[in-house]
Image 1 (spheres, rainbow, N blue to C red):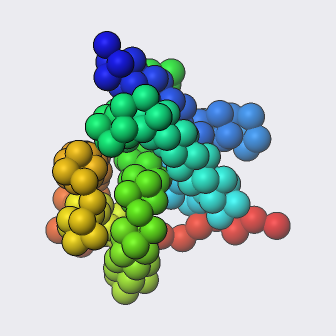
Image 2 (spheres, rainbow, N blue to C red):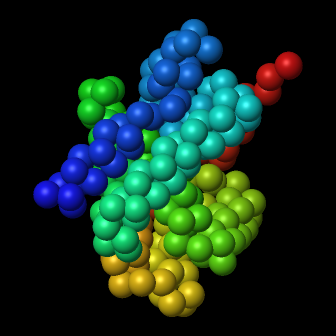
Length: 197
Protein backbone atom coordinates (compact mmCIF):
# COMPACT_ATOMS: atom_id res chain seq x y z
CA UNK A 1 0.00 0.00 0.00
CA UNK A 2 2.87 2.39 0.79
CA UNK A 3 4.39 1.94 -2.64
CA UNK A 4 1.07 2.77 -4.34
CA UNK A 5 0.66 5.89 -2.20
CA UNK A 6 4.22 7.03 -2.96
CA UNK A 7 3.67 6.48 -6.68
CA UNK A 8 0.39 8.43 -6.61
CA UNK A 9 1.80 11.39 -4.66
CA UNK A 10 4.89 11.51 -6.88
CA UNK A 11 2.76 11.44 -10.02
CA UNK A 12 0.56 14.27 -8.72
CA UNK A 13 3.64 16.33 -7.77
CA UNK A 14 5.18 15.61 -11.15
CA UNK A 15 1.98 16.74 -12.85
CA UNK A 16 2.65 20.29 -11.66
CA UNK A 17 4.48 21.55 -14.74
CA UNK A 18 5.81 24.90 -13.58
CA UNK A 19 5.96 26.46 -17.02
CA UNK A 20 2.20 26.35 -17.56
CA UNK A 21 1.03 28.39 -14.54
CA UNK A 22 4.11 30.61 -14.84
CA UNK A 23 3.40 31.41 -18.47
CA UNK A 24 -0.31 31.92 -17.85
CA UNK A 25 -0.01 34.12 -14.78
CA UNK A 26 3.25 35.96 -15.37
CA UNK A 27 3.73 36.00 -19.12
CA UNK A 28 0.17 36.30 -20.43
CA UNK A 29 -0.21 33.03 -22.32
CA UNK A 30 0.14 29.26 -22.29
CA UNK A 31 3.71 28.41 -23.32
CA UNK A 32 2.40 25.30 -25.09
CA UNK A 33 0.84 27.54 -27.74
CA UNK A 34 4.22 28.94 -28.79
CA UNK A 35 7.66 27.81 -29.84
CA UNK A 36 7.95 24.03 -29.88
CA UNK A 37 4.62 23.61 -28.11
CA UNK A 38 6.37 21.96 -25.19
CA UNK A 39 5.90 22.77 -21.50
CA UNK A 40 9.56 22.47 -20.55
CA UNK A 41 12.22 24.90 -19.42
CA UNK A 42 13.83 25.11 -22.87
CA UNK A 43 10.65 26.28 -24.56
CA UNK A 44 10.01 28.74 -21.71
CA UNK A 45 13.45 30.23 -22.35
CA UNK A 46 12.85 30.27 -26.09
CA UNK A 47 9.47 31.99 -25.78
CA UNK A 48 9.74 34.14 -22.62
CA UNK A 49 13.47 34.46 -21.92
CA UNK A 50 16.21 32.87 -19.85
CA UNK A 51 14.81 34.01 -16.49
CA UNK A 52 11.51 32.26 -17.20
CA UNK A 53 13.37 29.16 -18.34
CA UNK A 54 15.58 29.06 -15.24
CA UNK A 55 12.59 29.59 -12.94
CA UNK A 56 10.86 26.67 -14.64
CA UNK A 57 13.95 24.47 -14.31
CA UNK A 58 14.30 25.25 -10.61
CA UNK A 59 10.65 24.63 -9.75
CA UNK A 60 10.51 21.38 -11.73
CA UNK A 61 13.66 20.16 -10.00
CA UNK A 62 12.28 21.11 -6.57
CA UNK A 63 9.09 19.11 -7.06
CA UNK A 64 11.19 16.08 -8.01
CA UNK A 65 13.47 16.42 -4.99
CA UNK A 66 10.42 16.75 -2.73
CA UNK A 67 8.80 13.63 -4.20
CA UNK A 68 11.98 11.55 -3.88
CA UNK A 69 12.69 12.68 -0.33
CA UNK A 70 9.15 11.71 0.61
CA UNK A 71 9.53 8.31 -1.03
CA UNK A 72 12.86 7.74 0.70
CA UNK A 73 11.42 8.72 4.07
CA UNK A 74 8.69 6.10 3.89
CA UNK A 75 10.39 3.26 1.98
CA UNK A 76 14.11 3.92 1.68
CA UNK A 77 15.86 3.45 -1.64
CA UNK A 78 12.95 1.63 -3.27
CA UNK A 79 10.53 4.41 -2.35
CA UNK A 80 12.96 7.03 -3.60
CA UNK A 81 13.30 5.26 -6.96
CA UNK A 82 9.54 4.76 -7.39
CA UNK A 83 8.92 8.41 -6.55
CA UNK A 84 11.47 9.56 -9.12
CA UNK A 85 10.02 7.35 -11.85
CA UNK A 86 6.44 8.47 -11.24
CA UNK A 87 7.42 12.11 -10.94
CA UNK A 88 8.89 12.08 -14.43
CA UNK A 89 5.78 10.30 -15.74
CA UNK A 90 3.64 13.04 -14.20
CA UNK A 91 5.85 15.73 -15.70
CA UNK A 92 5.57 14.29 -19.20
CA UNK A 93 1.88 13.40 -18.91
CA UNK A 94 0.43 15.81 -16.31
CA UNK A 95 -3.03 15.11 -14.96
CA UNK A 96 -3.78 18.81 -14.40
CA UNK A 97 -2.92 19.97 -17.92
CA UNK A 98 -4.52 17.51 -20.31
CA UNK A 99 -1.56 15.12 -20.20
CA UNK A 100 0.53 17.59 -22.27
CA UNK A 101 3.65 18.37 -20.28
CA UNK A 102 7.40 18.60 -20.67
CA UNK A 103 9.96 16.18 -22.03
CA UNK A 104 11.45 15.21 -18.69
CA UNK A 105 14.79 17.02 -18.90
CA UNK A 106 14.38 19.17 -15.76
CA UNK A 107 13.15 16.18 -13.80
CA UNK A 108 16.02 14.11 -15.19
CA UNK A 109 18.48 16.70 -13.87
CA UNK A 110 16.87 16.38 -10.44
CA UNK A 111 17.13 12.58 -10.64
CA UNK A 112 20.83 13.03 -11.27
CA UNK A 113 21.11 15.36 -8.28
CA UNK A 114 19.29 12.88 -6.05
CA UNK A 115 21.47 10.04 -7.31
CA UNK A 116 24.57 11.98 -6.26
CA UNK A 117 26.53 15.13 -7.01
CA UNK A 118 29.11 13.27 -9.14
CA UNK A 119 26.27 11.95 -11.32
CA UNK A 120 24.81 15.43 -11.66
CA UNK A 121 28.24 16.75 -12.60
CA UNK A 122 28.66 14.10 -15.31
CA UNK A 123 25.27 14.63 -16.95
CA UNK A 124 25.61 18.42 -16.81
CA UNK A 125 29.03 18.21 -18.43
CA UNK A 126 27.62 15.96 -21.16
CA UNK A 127 24.69 18.31 -21.70
CA UNK A 128 26.65 21.55 -21.92
CA UNK A 129 29.46 20.10 -24.02
CA UNK A 130 27.09 18.52 -26.54
CA UNK A 131 24.75 21.53 -26.69
CA UNK A 132 27.65 23.98 -27.09
CA UNK A 133 29.29 22.01 -29.90
CA UNK A 134 26.07 21.20 -31.77
CA UNK A 135 24.07 24.31 -30.82
CA UNK A 136 21.17 21.91 -30.30
CA UNK A 137 19.69 21.79 -26.81
CA UNK A 138 17.67 18.73 -27.81
CA UNK A 139 20.84 16.78 -28.65
CA UNK A 140 22.38 17.86 -25.36
CA UNK A 141 19.25 16.73 -23.53
CA UNK A 142 19.16 13.31 -25.19
CA UNK A 143 22.86 12.60 -24.66
CA UNK A 144 22.64 13.74 -21.03
CA UNK A 145 19.64 11.48 -20.49
CA UNK A 146 21.46 8.50 -21.97
CA UNK A 147 24.49 9.24 -19.79
CA UNK A 148 22.40 9.26 -16.59
CA UNK A 149 22.10 5.49 -16.03
CA UNK A 150 25.71 4.98 -17.10
CA UNK A 151 26.90 7.61 -14.64
CA UNK A 152 24.74 5.98 -11.95
CA UNK A 153 26.39 2.63 -12.61
CA UNK A 154 29.89 4.09 -12.69
CA UNK A 155 29.35 5.78 -9.30
CA UNK A 156 27.98 2.57 -7.77
CA UNK A 157 24.43 3.77 -7.17
CA UNK A 158 21.91 1.28 -5.79
CA UNK A 159 20.11 -1.11 -8.11
CA UNK A 160 16.74 0.59 -7.63
CA UNK A 161 18.19 3.99 -8.50
CA UNK A 162 19.94 2.65 -11.60
CA UNK A 163 16.67 1.10 -12.76
CA UNK A 164 14.88 4.41 -12.15
CA UNK A 165 17.47 6.22 -14.24
CA UNK A 166 17.28 3.66 -17.05
CA UNK A 167 13.52 4.19 -17.14
CA UNK A 168 13.82 7.98 -17.07
CA UNK A 169 16.45 7.98 -19.82
CA UNK A 170 14.21 5.85 -22.03
CA UNK A 171 11.26 8.17 -21.40
CA UNK A 172 13.26 11.32 -22.16
CA UNK A 173 14.52 9.78 -25.41
CA UNK A 174 10.95 8.79 -26.31
CA UNK A 175 9.66 12.30 -25.59
CA UNK A 176 12.38 13.67 -27.91
CA UNK A 177 11.50 11.36 -30.80
CA UNK A 178 10.41 14.30 -32.95
CA UNK A 179 13.64 16.15 -32.21
CA UNK A 180 15.67 13.03 -33.00
CA UNK A 181 13.89 12.71 -36.35
CA UNK A 182 14.71 16.35 -37.18
CA UNK A 183 18.32 15.90 -36.03
CA UNK A 184 18.70 12.98 -38.42
CA UNK A 185 17.16 15.03 -41.25
CA UNK A 186 19.27 18.08 -40.39
CA UNK A 187 16.21 20.28 -39.81
CA UNK A 188 16.41 20.70 -36.03
CA UNK A 189 16.76 24.44 -35.29
CA UNK A 190 19.48 25.94 -33.10
CA UNK A 191 18.46 27.19 -29.67
CA UNK A 192 18.05 30.95 -29.29
CA UNK A 193 16.51 32.21 -26.02
CA UNK A 194 14.27 35.23 -26.27
CA UNK A 195 16.07 38.41 -25.26
CA UNK A 196 14.34 40.28 -22.46
CA UNK A 197 14.95 43.70 -20.93
